[in-house]
Length: 276
Image (cartoon, rainbow, N blue to C red; front, top):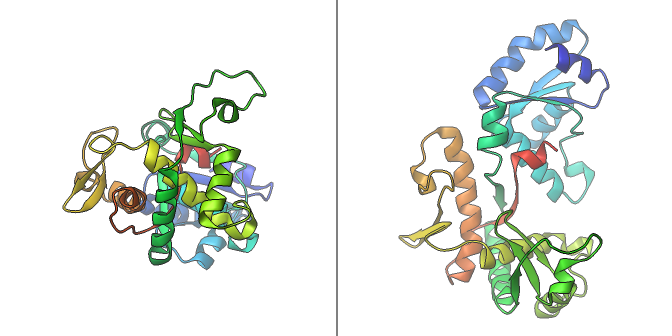
C-alpha cells in the first residue's frame, strides 16, 4: 500500500494490476479504510462496468483492476474521438501482481475489442476486397536509420510475422482512398476506417488457416499460440472471456476473406503496450 499511496499523492492516479475481478474488488474494499484515513481515495474496475462508474474509478488516487480491463480501457481510449470518451488519466505508476504471468505469459496475447457488428460488416467486406489487390512483402528491418523500408520496398505494404504488424505505403493508401471513394483516409471523420484497413491487411497477410485459426461449422475460431488448442476449449473463466472477444473480432476480419458474414469492428494491442 505504501508505494501506491506515496505515488498517488502526485494526483495523476496509480494502478494496482491483479489477475481477476474478485481480487481487484476485494483488495480495494479491504484497503479503503486505510486510504481514506490517509486522505486518499481508492476505486476498482470490473468487467462490463458502466462508463460513468469506470471513469469515476479512474478518478480515484488508486485504482485496482485486472490486466485485461486496464488493457481494454487503454484501447477504448485510443479509439475515442474526444477526451470526453476517455476514462484513463495517465500511466504514471503501477504495481503488477503476478508479474511473470501478466507481463511474460500473457503479454503476447492480443487484446481485441469489438463493437457495432451490423454497421461494420459491409466495411469489412469492402476492405477485404481492396487489400486482395495489394502487393505484400515481408519486413526485413535492415534499412538504415531514417530510411522508410515500406517506401523503399516497392510493395504496397510490409508485414512482420514475428511482431504481427503491417505497414502500408503511401501509394497503397492512395489506392485504397480511390477504391472506397474518399479523399483522405486519415481525416478525423474517417478515423474508424484506418482500423478496418489495418485489420484487413493483417487478416490477409499474417493469419494462416489451420495454423492461426480454423474454420469449424462455418465459424472462424482462433488457435491459442501457446497451447495449440482452439480457444473455446481453453479452461478458465477469465481466459474464456478474453478469448471470446478475440475470437469474435478476429473472426469478422477473416470471414470477409472467406466470403462469410462478418461480426465486429476491432482494435488490438497487448497488456505490455498498455502498461507502457
